[in-house]
Image (cartoon, rainbow, N blue to C red; front, side, top):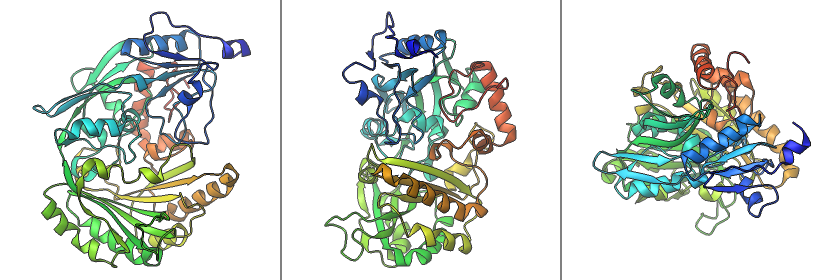
Length: 463
């Protein structure tokens, strides 16, 4: 690409949204993403107001042989929402959501965040599994499968997807569902943004809340080994309604934190139990009595409040480096290896999150959609975060050491929304050989020239 092409001022006749060129006011804010390590400068950011706008922006990139990215929530650690010297198709102008409480369905446009989606659906006591941080976009999460606090009770986000409105690489607007373009629909549920841009998602909603038993338990790091063993056994026997995640974190230096653990490494357990609050409280009683915890703020609360619990520790603009694995098992040896490192963080913002599988996740056939890993008992996310770029090398090395410590018990696959840019082999391994070949065949049909490649990419068979 020539310098002239990279700096051209592109116009889009008929475009109804906003266009941001590098010299426009608002451009720098529009190109910012969650991960502060990412500093990319698109030739044009096209904030779309409709699916027709998306068609125009895709056509501009395709016809000028320019790289293309898709900005939904901008929360992915790879920063794939923005691309240097290319066209950023910005969905943040697509915010409409229509909820039908009678049929328990919703049509949600691709620029919504989970905070916005949850607010609309919880007006009716309805939900689907959503991201654990509110400014996560619904698009990236749903297309990557979608892990969240409700997954054990109602499955992953993609399990609730009934249909998708898609703009294709050749500029068509199509619908994908079990009845229309079913193979495309299969690939969209876990295959990411490889096959088109989803401008609207049609979800089946579930009765959740609006009040659930939620909150957090916090234990001193000295109890970590014993706690994780207890948590492992507790969750393996827990009913589907018990939604939790265990996290190695540093307690904030806040007044509400007890002095003995304030500002120190701790182990937190986030709780989100659906069903009647009284029954949920009884289900959680063994875990709340263990230790006991240094802090117990588990109580009846709005589901939307549970969805906000992690937001203070996940601020946009920090430096981020992530990786993840599914674990086939979590024996005592694995726990010891994890605890030895995870309780010695190099940044107070770092997190290691252990998410139990089981429940509704297992009720979906392994081959029903692109995303599998239905039998994995544990999903572990190494989420390193720090403020000073000078600390990058130290934090990346620590993250890799952490991940290596539990690698002997890993399945070799990963939840792609939790990993960074780790290469084609890692993407292929996430699906397994058979599914990956099926996804490549789908890519051959819908995007043979790999226009949609700024993602966890599945290239066409032609390379």
